[in-house]
Image 1 (cartoon, rainbow, N blue to C red):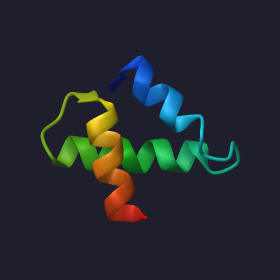
Image 2 (cartoon, rainbow, N blue to C red):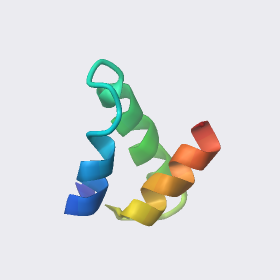
Image 3 (spheres, one colour):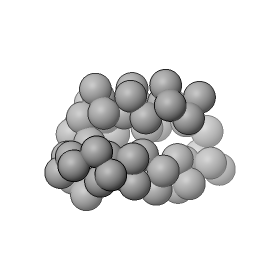
Image 4 (tube, one colour):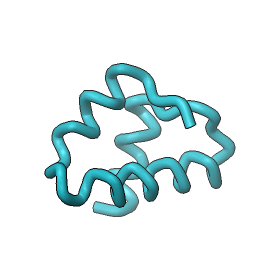
Length: 51
């Protein structure tokens, strides 16, 4: 799954020890939504869903 630079920057705001799990959840969320790229918008939608 491709991430935009802006979305990668947002991901780095998540503590490093939970970042791999967060990345997987966000990618799964995007895939289920039919997205092919993680943008800031997709990141924010996933964050809102998962808290």
